[in-house]
Length: 116
Image 1 (cartoon, rainbow, N blue to C red):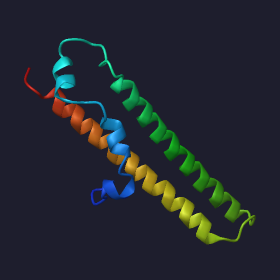
Image 2 (tube, rainbow, N blue to C red):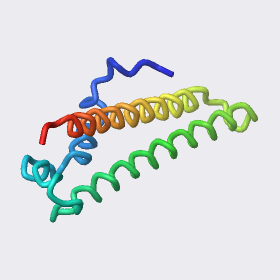
Image 3 (cartoon, rainbow, N blue to C red):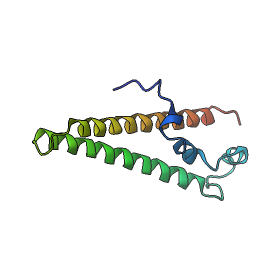
């Protein structure tokens, strides 16, 4: 797997991380110990929905890259450029998805280590 430690997430999609973290503030964090319900603005469902959309987009790009490879191998298309572009889109999308997952897990671990 490719090393993603040098990826600048803001250059890939500046709105995706904010979509995942939108709606959280200090009062939401303090409420986590008091109740198991989500906050009034439905932030958890928005985060989950954004994450599922990101995974779906990554899967679609991966499938498109695979279809382009098969088409090229079967001789249906002669454009190696299109195949390479599809592969790179899939790779960047996967790297971005993994980076988002790592950021979310890191934030979760930080919350779990907080003293109450």
